[in-house]
Image 1 (cartoon, rainbow, N blue to C red):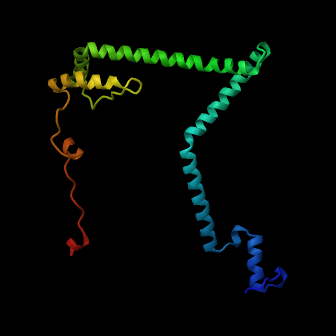
Image 2: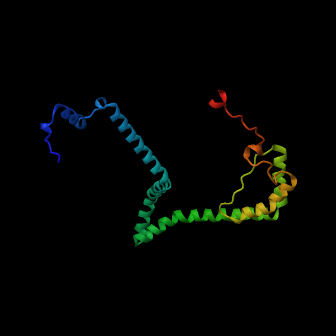
Image 3: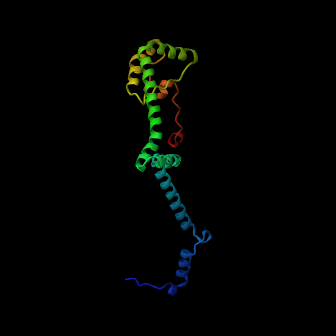
Length: 198
């Protein structure tokens, strides 16, 4: 069993080690200690950065919530004076923010439905415009997305893409099995190995 020794009863080497632990300065650290401390701080910074990256959406939402609350506070206090219940004042203040956002979403949805209706009824004209652009100006491709109305992409693929394939503006199949083959790029030569050089 080990005995406990009082700090004053330590030998000269132990006393110096004890002083270094209690009164440490960067210049007093040995190289292994400096490496260990640097590595610990680096790993801590990496873990904190990864954590912040994982919760970035929550942090952004919290910051936006604080900003909206700061802007709505005067409106809430004004409504609280005129309405008898604080909950009713809070609900009215929130509706001031939520109703315009919902209105903008409804407007965007109706515009998307109109565009998709146009594509469904005028697929030949849409294909003509895309084909003219590809033939005259050249194009690497188009981004067609439908994040609000999921059926719109299906109509485009089923009705417009076959017309573009008939006109030769869109491939029907690929000649190679890799992207390098399809782009017509040469296969790079391999670097000579040590066994081949000897």
